[in-house]
Length: 354
Ligand SMILES: Cc1ncc(COP(=O)(O)O)c(/C=C/C(=O)C(=O)O)c1O
Image 1 (cartoon, rainbow, N blue to C red):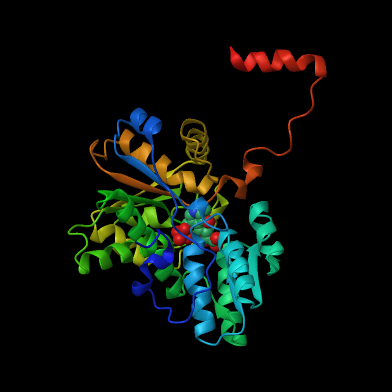
Image 2 (cartoon, rainbow, N blue to C red):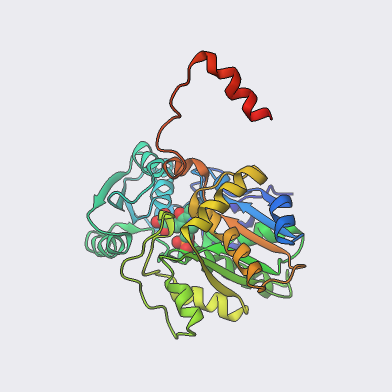
């Protein structure tokens, strides 16, 4: 019996060389008991992708993407990123022993993620524009200089990320009725859908979950397309949200995400920054699950859909929570609490107990 991990499913992955691996995947699937009870959903689960080696689901895509870079004889790798892709690329490039360059939107990336990219040895370039512009730029430069591009426009990233669906079905012991993900560049929802399609064509499952994409109210091009029944996603020019990981106006995987949602009678919904931060706190304080803001969007989206009467209470729902709390401490606290007098400590302590 192989342990739960990305490479448990190696026969369904394109890599033929020894993979560049940091033992990614095998993340916990938690039953949300308190939040589920509050929402009237007895079968609400969260798959904690913050428990990957660099603290986000990107590691699933990078173990395959960087392995493919070596397999294809590439000598260097690059990406644009809202942070987690760059952190993951840096770590896997270090493991592989190849140089990495990452382009970040200046001032809009959580410090933990930049620390990772820097410490793992990537060349970190901050540009005076948003993620969408950084992605355009890095695509041009990779083509011009023969550097291997590892944003989720690279299909090998999605190959690795599709394993999240394999694991969730293995862990649940059945296919969920609904699979919920936060959506930024829309790679992850597309990858999960591909994995589920593969399970179906291999005969492991006989139905597909309703693919549900959640975006921030200030950055919701996919939601607009779904709600407006548009043929394609119209890029949003100035996306804004405290959930900087999903502050993306022109998702490269937009068409794949629309297919995933429409082919499964799924849906898309937007949640406000307040709803995101409130659910981030609930997950931490009611379930002991620490995630960064964007990750909480998937569960916040379910709360909103319940309030709109769009969810059957007996649905088995898997929400992907995509990144660890430690990635973005600054949205929680700007600096350590100021010291209090020694004499006041006992009173402060007792105030917690009553
Ligand atoms: C915590 C977290 N949650 C959700 C998403 C959205 O996933 P996609 O819809 O597949 O993009 C991201 C994406 C991050 C980047 O796009 C990047 O790091 O450049 C993320 O970091």
